[in-house]
Length: 382
Ligand code: GLY
Image (cartoon, rainbow, N blue to C red; front, top):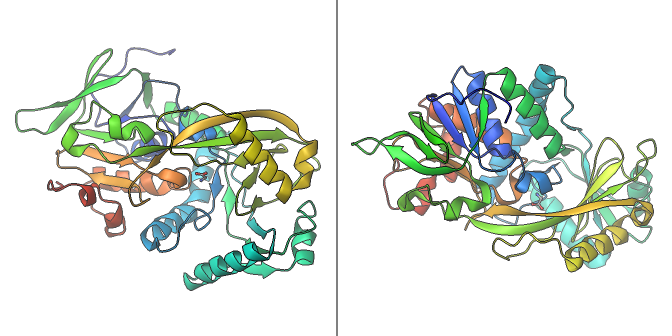
């Protein structure tokens, strides 16, 4: 890394430079806190690199997750301002676009399910509109002519997670935040047990607060004391990238069916996602995974057959037992967790950053309660 020796003392150390860690560092640095970030790989090379970047608060919910929905909605409201601030500071495009989303039913069974989901959205006060096949194809002419109906969610948006990471890296450099390429090996504590920094592969670094944002490896992060290690498991996801003409995009909005979603990029590319596989730490791209995504994308949007195949990637979502993220103070004074974002890590980045800045400032936001690490531990949370 092209820079001077890392600063040996900061107010806050953030461990992990995925989108969550970078967004937390951005928000903290913006509030005048000195921050150093540690990352053992490339920034943004975990789940962030694979994510399609859908900002769709209800699209990823199972029924009965009101606490997660509340966090998702809060974060979607913050997104435009969050990306706008990063873009203004750096002059870089994050790929944020308020495209809306069209959720498509490809047969009558799927139409019944989609109508139930729409009722759920409406019961939460969310705007969504049922469209018949002709109206849906007026909006998105490329969608399969045999569709049974669709739901339009105008508020949904999309961002390019890789572009956002690049913009945040540039913005953090402007705010004086160093991203240090080193592995964190231990938490350093004083005689009263309170955090005083981290040990790393290149030495010790001091900070009164450590924010752990390790993503899918959180459950096996040996540097975190066992009593505060969160119950996070890796959930594999594969995505496929295709390229089409930017002047004549295959779709204007996020398109979704029961089995696939298609997220457009401003330059004519699309991301097809995503498989969901309980395979431990396996990150191989498989023939079966790519086949499934292409087959389902073709059923939804036959034009994908004409697009250039750019590549396929696999990554690991940080899953939790209740699908809610784990954000908050732990039983170790000075140690804060920001992990377990499962299918909503890109969407939840701004609200997580907001939460971490509040916690570091000594506040305890009421709206954060459902995400507290304390729900998984008997240890008192400080
Ligand atoms: N949020 C998209 C996914 O996890 O597949």
